[in-house]
Each structure stands twice: as C-alpha cells, then as structure tokens.
Length: 505
Image 1 (cartoon, rainbow, N blue to C red):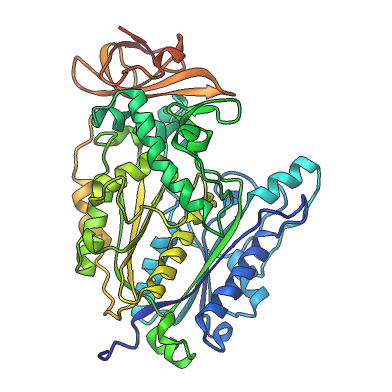
Image 2: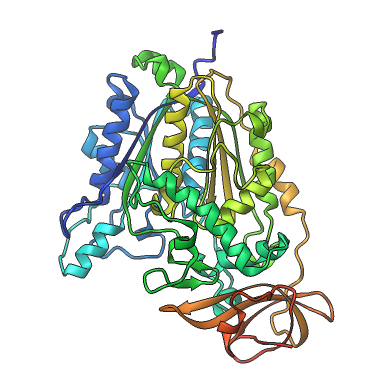
C-alpha cells in the first residue's frame, strides 16, 4: 500500500440497534438510544481514547423535530446529550435537516471537512423511538425525555419546503399520497396492465421482505409472499392505490445507528486496525425540481441519474463493479426509479437491499440510510477490496445522496455539487395552471383510502388546450379507478373554491 494523505477520511466504526420487545414505558429515550449505539460504534473501531478525540457530534433530525411533535418533551441539543452520556467533549454539535438523504449527505460533507482539516474525529448518529412513544401514549404512560443543554445545537442548512399551498390543498403533501403517483406513472411507462404491475411490485418487494427476515436489526423480520404483500384485506388495507399497508414504509420502530469517521492520521494515532477502515471512493448530492408539480415527468429522476453517474465516475468504476448495495426503499416506486436511473435490473442478482427495506426492516425516519451504510460497511470489511454502494433519498424523490465505499485506500475527492446540479436545474418543467378548465389527459393518479375505503382520487394531468399541467381530485366513485387503465385517459376539469374537480370524459 502506497502512502496516503494523513487527512484522508476513513469510516472506522459502525453500530445498529433495534428494540422489538420492551414493554410500554420501558423503551429508551432517543438520547439514550443514540448513546448506546455511539458507544458500540466506538468499540467497533478497535481504537483507544476515541471519546476524548471526538471533535464533532452530528445527529440526524428526528421525526419529533420534523413536524410530528414531541409528546414526551424535546431536547435543544441532541448531539450534546449524546456526548454527555459517552464522555465526549466535542467542540461542535450539529443537528441535521429533514430528509432521508441526510445520513449519506452528512457523511459526504464531514468527509470533506476532515480532508480539509476542519475536523479529525466525527461521530454521526440517529434514531427513532416511535414504537416506544406510540405504545406509551396508548397505555397512558407519561415519559420524561426532555433535556436542555447549556447551548442549542448548530442546525444544518435551511429547511426545504417540499410542497406548495396548492399541492397541499389537493392532497399532494405526504409520502403515502405521493409515491403512489410515481408508481402508477411507472406502470404506464412500463406498458403494464394495472394488475400485472401490482404483481411486479409484489415480486420486487417479496425479495426485500426476505432480506429483512434474515436481518437481526430488522423491526419486522417476516418473510411475505408477493401475493400477501399486494392483496388488500382487513390487515393489509389499501392506503394510496396501488399500495397496501405492506407496501408502505413502517415508521413504528425503535431503531438507532451510529458511524465513526476520522482522518487517517487520527486512525493511526488512536490505534484503529487497518481491517476496520473503509474509504469513501465516490460521493454525490443532488436534488430534483423540489415541488412534485414541477417534475419533468413522474416515471424518472434526472437527479438520481446524474448523482449516481457522478459518484461512480469519482470512484472510477461502472455499475457492474458494485458488489453490495442498498437502494433507498420507502416505497417500491423509489426502488424502481432508482434502479432504472442507476442502470440496475429490478431483479439484479446482487440484490437491491442489504437491510430489507423500509416497509420490512423498518423506516427510522430520516435515519434509515445510516443502517444501509452500516450494512454496506460490514460487507466491505468481510470482502476486502469489494465495492459497496448506497443510494439515500429524501422528501418525495426530491433530494438524493450517494456513497461508493471500499476497504482499498484511495485519495479523497469530492466535486462541488453545484457543478452537476446546474444540469438538473436547467431542465424545463411544464407550466402549471392553478385554475384549470376544460379537457385534459391524466399524467398520473392515485386513489386515497380511508380505513380501506376509497375516499377520493388525486389526479395530475395536462390540459389539451395548451399542454399545461394541472392538479385535481376525483370525488365521484374513485373506487372505479382501481385496477383499470387510467393514465392517459381523458378528463374534464374545472376549478372550485377549494380544489379542482376532474371527471372522466
């Protein structure tokens, strides 16, 4: 092995945890969950004196601070709370933004900071205690998870506004309503009849559930057949057609993960064995047109294509050289779009997940991909020289981060994301008409269900008159849209005081 720059960043410690068994009221607080995995990641590194060397602790934003509320009290500096419990006196305490891309994005940024000499040892952690939280609330148990540090945490970046007022009015505001829009567009794009497409989704996600069934950190390690996954029944009701409950990310989890990054010089000084070290060979961070109503179309993602291209180019490899990968999997449409754009078959024999996916492994909020990274790192260590790949997604197929990993030492480089982001930003979006009237064509749709019963349909369409895009709802017999071809159908649309109303022509 040749000489490597002492500032080269290297990932040296990983840890994960899951709680499936604690009684209501007995689960750990978020700060205790993260302290436990932080200690485990430090131990995993094999180094000594690591706690004292940590100069930055970063926590991925919790659901409680992403608009969901903190019923058992909030914390003004979770990184400090973790540091206090593990005996680390970091000079920087950073709290991440909303978005499932955050774990890989923060790794990319901290790796660059280490390379630039801004940090030597960074602890990155995150968790979700929503299983414990919901069980305690249901049992009427009050917990005290609140904690105030002397100083609030530094907050990363500016928050992204993922939905416009008009989108929210039409129900285009939550993942459970939006990812089905992508799914139905994909079915039409692939030229499949609706039921045949649902069967294909089932076959895809059956493979994910099988991986989760064998993963010791999965919240729901249960193998399910394709038929079980896609068939609506009392236990597995439709939420947003074509997605049943088993096709939705499961956020009712108690899961935590931690990563330890440091410079090669610090790893040498702290005695980290070479076999623990995994290097970031390539990385990229991109974002789509932020609003769903601005997307170029609903079956592709230019930002995923360009981000994967840049990360693999930086690593100097093609997609065929990837040995192990974890593709973000909140919903099957995210997997299908990513696979298409990265250049992977949906049934790639290498497998598209190492965790088992958010519906089955579990979806610990913004932190899911930290588990994906931990799984990739474990595979890279077990097969020195093999390449691992992580795709992390945030929002509504909105923000994307990529990491290419290997035990082979490599000089660190990171291209400025603004350079390749300009290519995405330059793409033209169809104009949006807020008060559409007249004949149009359905681009995509979903049927939103209430307790398994069709409630209304969300429609995104294009006016025949000028090709402009519109948002609308169908209120009359939305159940008639299930398992019949709808994308490409003609509608008439008109505005009302609240939402635009469409009817099949």
